Amino acid sequence: DAKTTQPNSMESNEEEPVHLPCNHSTISGTDYIHWYRQLPSQGPEYVIHGLTSNVNNRMASLAIAEDRKSSTLILHRATLRDAAVYYCILHFGNEKLTFGTGTRLTIIP
Amino acid sequence: AAGVIQSPRHLIKEKRETATLKCYPIPRHDTVYWYQQGPGQDPQFLISFYEKMQSDKGSIPDRFSAQQFSDYHSELNMSSLELGDSALYFCASSERQGGNIQYFGAGTRLSVL
Image (cartoon, rainbow over all chains, first blue to last red; front, side, top):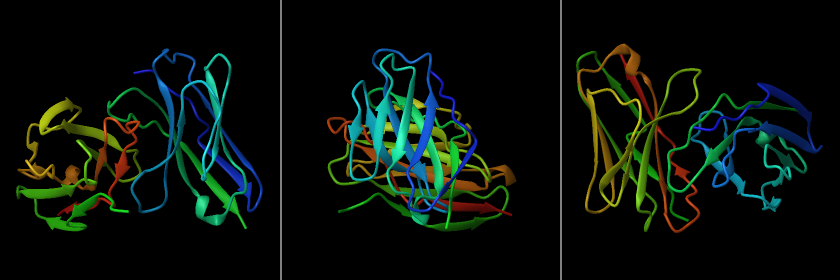
């Protein structure tokens, strides 16, 4: 499985934008870049995914580098409810999700 | 909108007992996945089913078995429970034609004493 690398932890102030980076230098041409998050005591939750172009949805934006070897999840205005572990996962088809260590995001009030 | 339903939410068992965890996927979803998350760990894939057939298998102990039924619900059967089986067990479902986004249930917390 192609691997991803994320910082172990990040902090951000409430109501400010958050940029969560992910490196995936061995990504294959068919891999989609998926982001999931896991809030405390809950199951993982889908956030966003993309292949080549930047993507936006109601939760976040995903910026994908032109060479696809890295991507950034952008939370435009972090709230306390965004405190979670964020996982960047390379995914193809209906394969299993392979969770790495993720980034633990702490939001400072 | 309907979500993935898991039951029970909590389960306490003794060593060497058996446990059955149930998962009801989102209607019209054709694929079910099971994941195990130990204390302080990240979720690890156990097994998946597509259209009631096993489609992939991860690090699932031989003591565990699972199946998907005709109504698409799935059950994870665990026998000869060990202390190390204490974990959160998540079920997820997806629709093959729906971008393969996996939707997770709230999980079953299994405690083996």
